[in-house]
Amino acid sequence: MRFIYGTPPGRLALEWVAKHAWFSAWYGARMDTPASCERIAPFLAEYGLDPAEFVKRPGEFTSFNDFFIRALKPGARPVDVAPGAVVFPADGRHLGLQDISRVDGIFVKGQRFDLATLVGDAPLVERFREGAAVMSRLCPVDYHRFHFPAAGVPGAPRLINGPLYSVSPIALRRNVAYLWQNKRMLTQLETPDLGRVLLLEIGATNVGSIVETFEPGKPVTKGAEKGHFRFGGSSMVTIFERGRVKLAEDLIEQTARSRELYAHIGSRMAVRA
Image 1 (cartoon, rainbow, N blue to C red):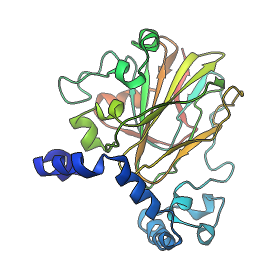
Image 2 (image 1 turned 180 degrees about the vertical axis):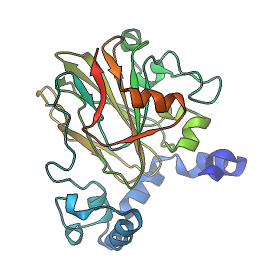
Image 3 (image 1 turned 90 degrees about the vertical axis):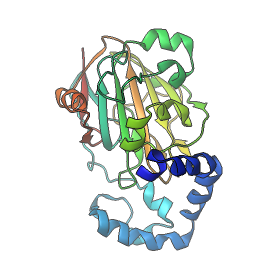
C-alpha cells in the first residue's frame, strides 16, 4: 500500500490498473468461483474469526464472496436501543467530526472535507455544511453488511460514479479526496428526531459493487440491514445536520489524536443533541 500511494511508480500503477472498474470486476469475479472457497479456512485461521457468529457454517459457503458478505446470527451485534442513541452503521475503524467545516490536524495539512463534491447536490451542501460526520472504514476481515444508524424512512439510493481508490489510512491521510472521488451511493434518511441524515457507502479497490437491499420509502428500525459490500475494503460516511447529534466522547478523543476507533455495528456513536 505504501508503494502504491507513496511512490511515483506505485501511483502510475494505480492510474493504469487499480483504480479502474474492470480491475475490480475481474478480481471480484475470481472471488465468485467455487475454487475461491479454499481461501476461507486460511482466512478464518489467520484473522481469528468466530464461525459461531455466522448464520452459515464455513463449509456451506459457495464462494469466498459468499463468505465475505456473510450474515450474522441474531444477537451477534446487539443494537443500543436507548432513546436518543445513534449507532455505528458497520463494523470498522471510525473517525468522528463534530463540525465537518473544521478538520485541521486530522488529514494532511491543507486538505478539507469537500462536502459539495462528496454529495453532488448544492441544497444538501447548504443544509449539512457545518454538520457532524462519522467516517467508517472497513477492512477485508470485517463483517461487510451495513445497517441504518437510526430509525426513519429512507429514500431511493443515488449512484455517484467514480474510480475505485483504496480507503486505507495511508491513502486517506495522503489524500482525503479519495472519499469523494470514489464510486459511492447516497441515501437520504428522514428521521423523527434527527432530521435528515445522509448515508454514503463508498467503494474501494477490489470492490466491484455496493449492493443495497432495503426498500426505499419503507420505514426502517435502528440497526436494520441496509445492504452489503462485495469483496474488498470499503467505507461509509454518515452526515448529520448541524446541532442534531453529539458524537461519542471516545470517538471525538481518538479522532483528535488522528486515531481510528474500532467499534461494531449497533454500538453507540452519538446521542441526540
